[in-house]
Length: 124
Image (cartoon, rainbow, N blue to C red):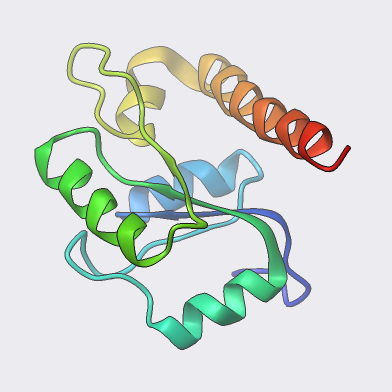
């Protein structure tokens, strides 16, 4: 379901339900089969050519954080994101369920704005 032309942002997350929540809010996303797997090096290279920013967005729990640290060591250009813990919210689908679509959109827009602004200032 990814655009052939790519775009600005791509999220690599850990589950199909998170992909669906992000897609519902206009964010292209993919999910490997599990947190213990990542896309192949050749797949990652193809994605880097198509997307300006690639985010790694796994669960904010011990397995998710460990997996993100491991992947970040191999692909240091990834932007690592995780939700601050709000009760039991450990991923974007939990956040949407607990806080609603409007708050999820606001959170996504804050993150996008931050990195878009960061890109502008880093190229000056």
